Length: 163
Image (cartoon, rainbow, N blue to C red; front, side):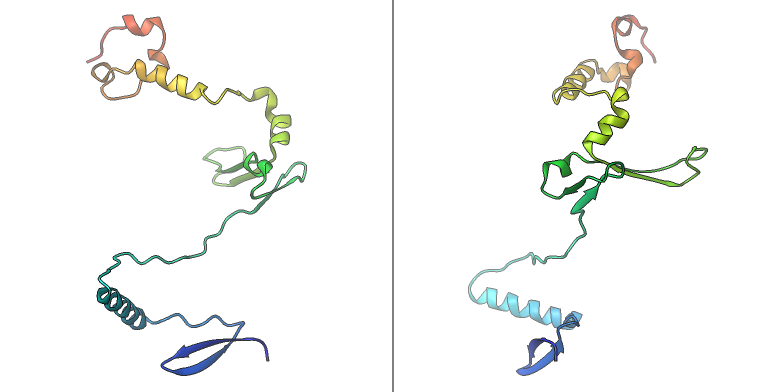
């Protein structure tokens, strides 16, 4: 006989084969268990209003580069630098209408394949760009909309107001 999971219910010992999960409690059993917990807490002057539970969630633990085959494991620096594209082709796409596009590339292959077209900037550059755009924002002039590229530069200061 394989190992067993033993469960004690109402004083009687029941055995379940270990390859079968224990039956989950019925809603009535859960409600009774919660009532018992609350009653015990009231006896000591403590009432917990939130009951936490743990549930498993899927996660990615390994990524393999589709170009060179390099394997990156969760926790490795290389794992954080993998470029994973998951997109859906639109109407009239060369990939076919509605087809899924998936590719996983290590940072080295990403640079080798797309390097000439990549625009690499420092970590603070985005904040500088955002601050610059926000400094030109005028709710009266833009009607609450964020300024576009047409609003940039000296011509933006002399452009007539729109009503």
